[in-house]
Every structure is written in structure tokens, then in C-alpha cells.
Length: 218
Image 1 (cartoon, rainbow, N blue to C red):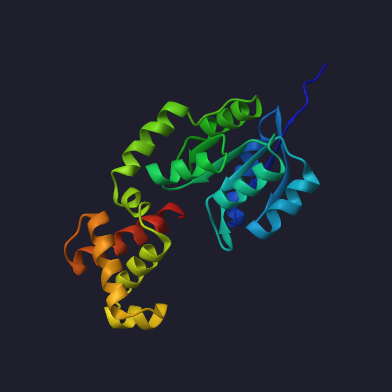
Image 2 (tube, one colour):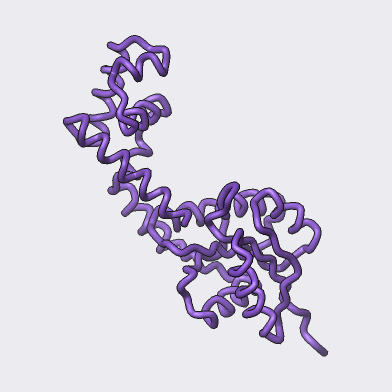
């Protein structure tokens, strides 16, 4: 008796990449591509239509990112394993994938055979994001700038971002409809949490964090 094919869904906003992935998958006797999408907006409707066994989701999309799509997929279809595909790996990105419910996290530079193996594993119910590894990386993130930023209140984080945009205390006060003295108090608190003493240090940190976030979705 012939085993049923593993039905794979692909999400990537680059047509050439999708064609390449589809070619790899269709070359396997036990797999087939049942649906594709080029944007986050198209993804959910296409997944509902094609009912795949595995979803392979690119991180960077023109109208969002694959981690957000993964979170939505897992909320609506908790039985559907998702593989996050990205060209850049770091601890924060892996944690975001794990928190979104992804079964695995695969670099685009991976060998084609490794991607196929990963699809087979998650289709069979395996979790490629090991709990111990996720905990280890979480500890590392807590010691990084991104981890320190997580300790800021929403108001402090907004002020931090405005400092990164080069705004003065007066400009921030006007932007946020606060007294300038209140802004100064917020800045003193966030400086203490971030372990910085000068505005230039905070601004430099804001630029680095923004660059890290941008690179995670490339």
C-alpha cells in the first residue's frame, strides 16, 4: 500500500525562491506542494484551502513576517507544524519562532537535503526546537540589550525609541503630551534599567537594536 504524500505549503514573497523550494520538494517521492503564497495576507486563506501537513514560512515578507503568520496558523490550526525559513539566525529570532509555536527554524543556507529531512521530521510530529536549547538562548537574551529592553515599561520604551530618533527632551514631551520634567524622570529610570549614563549611549543602543531587528527579518 502506498504511503500518503506529505502535503507542504510554501510562503515566500520571492517567486524564484518558491519555485526552487517547490522543485526540491516535488523531487521527493513522499512529498508534494499543495499550496503557495507570496504574502502574509494570502497565507491563511490558502492554508485553509489546501490543508497541508507542513507549512514552510519565510521570515521576511513584504506585508509582515513569517513568525506572525506562524502564530496565526498555530492559533487556528494547532495540529499544523510550521518551519520558519530565514537567512539570518540569532537567539532572539529563535525565541520568537519558539514562542510563536514553530516546530523548527531553518536557515536558507542549509543544504537542500537537510531541509527535506526537517520537513519529514516535523510532519512526523518531531519538535526541532529543543526545550533545553530554547531555555539556554533565553538566558543569553536576558543578558543582551534586547533582554534589558524587555524590562522597560511601554512608556519608557517609546521614549527610548524617540531618543534613538534624535529627539530632545522638549521634543519628546511635545510628542507624548507630557511635561518635560516627567520625561526627564522617565529617562532617568530607563537609563538605570539599561545601565547607561549618557544620552549618546542610549541613542547608540537604539540604533543597534533597530539594526538587529531589521536583520532578523531579512
